[in-house]
Amino acid sequence: MYLESGKYYHIYNHANGFENIFRKGENFSFFLEKYKFHLSAFFDTYAYCLMPNHFHFLVRVKSCEEIVAALEEMLKPTSTSPTSTKFETSSPTSTKFETSLKFMAKEELPPFFSAAKTSPSSRFNAYKKTSRKLEALKDLKSSNGSASEVEAFLQIWISRQLGDLFSSYTQAFNKQNKRMGGLFIHPFQRKEVLSDDYLRTLVVYIHNNPVYHGFFQRPEEWIYSSYNEIINNENYFVDSNTVIQWFSDFENFVFCHNIIPDIDFDYTLE
Image (cartoon, rainbow, N blue to C red):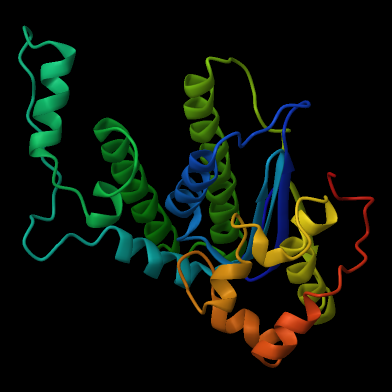
């Protein structure tokens, strides 16, 4: 299931079964951190809502040029650290714990990767994989690869990033809750957004999901969505200014959220 550059999508998924995919507050925040780590270079995110057993995101897939620029920024080292990643090789007699300590002591990754909430080896592997894929993408472009070849490369990469998001979250969730098996319905669902009217309707629908499901009476009461981030003019996960502009002004944005829109429920998961 591929996503095309420059297009807007409603991405959503549901628990595989009747259990919740977010059981604690820390699960919600951990998933968002994972989302940002795996997908911020590829998506502009405009709205999201995490519910206990499903989630919704409204995104635009960045262009190839935007993705390259974002990845280069992610891979940029600090001004005081070397450009390469170093870690000490363990001796044959080192224990796994000692090797881990040596790795962490010598790790010199770009800030985006060093700050990731995962193990040192996972951070290092993500850094190396991203570096290799970016070089492969640049090589494809510089060797006069066709637009369709570049697009296909990006579509596969983005699909795998989404897979890595779901897989890494599931592994952490399973470990925390002493469970086994899949957590999300496979594959994830997506619907292309084809009009400005539907774009605005979708923003309101996503933010009102907790109201629709009877959790609260107003969208600002649910903290696991982008609504409060937007009304507070923050830009941590979403592009708040752009979303407000879609509604002409702040007052109209708030007014529109007082009405739960009708959505084609044939494709929704609830």
